[in-house]
Amino acid sequence: MSHTDGLLWGTLRFHSDAEPTVLSGDSYSSGSHLQYVDISGAGDSGLTTAASMLLVEDTKVHDCEGIDGGGIDVRGGALELREVEVNSNHASGDGGGIFTQGDLDLFYCHVDDNHAGHYGGGISQRSGELTMTGGRLFGNDLPACLDNDGRKGAGLYLSGFAAQLESVTVRSNGIDGDGSTCTSGTMAGAGIWSDVQSLIVSNKVIRDGNVQGLAFKLY
Image (cartoon, helix red, strand yellow):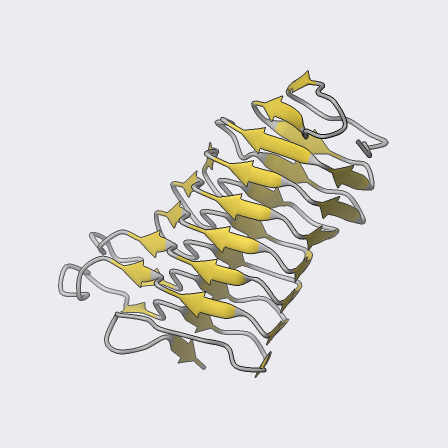
C-alpha cells in the first residue's frame, strides 16, 4: 500500500497484498499518494483532502455520508483519481459522491449510485478545474424540490472555472419529481448542469436526463 506523508484518520485493517487496506470511518489526507484502499462507513465524508496534490489509485470509496462530499471532499489543492470507484455515498448538501473546491482530474473512474440533497448527485464542482477521461456517471440522483434552492445536475454539477469530459458515459441519473414542488429555483440538468466559463465535451458522451427533457443546462 502506498500511504500519505501526513495524517490519515480511521481504523486501518491490513490484509495480504492481494486485498486492499480497509479504512473504517473518516479519513483525512495531507500527503501525496493513496493506493489499494477501501474506504467505507464514514459519517463525515469518506476522504477529505486539502493537499496541494494527492493521487488516489485503484481505490473504493463507498457507503459514506457527509454534508458536502459524502464520498470525497476536496477542500482545495488538487486531487487526481485513477481507476477509483465512488459509489453509494450520500451528502445532505452538495456532491453525493465528490464535492470539490479545487482541481479534480478523474481517469477511468466510476461514480455510481450516489445521492445529494441539493446539487451534484454524483459530483459537485464549486471552483477550480475538472477533467474526466473515460469512466462513467451512472445512477446518481437528487430528491424532489421542496424549497427555494432548486435541484441541478444529478450526475454532474459544474460551477467552477472550466471542465472537460472525454469518452465519459453519463446515464440513468435523475431528479425526482417534475419541478412543480419548487417554491422557487429550478430543476434541470439531470445528467449535467454547467455554469462554467469553458466546457469541452468530446468522443460520444452518452447522456440521458429526465427533468424537462434536459441532460444539460448550459449558460
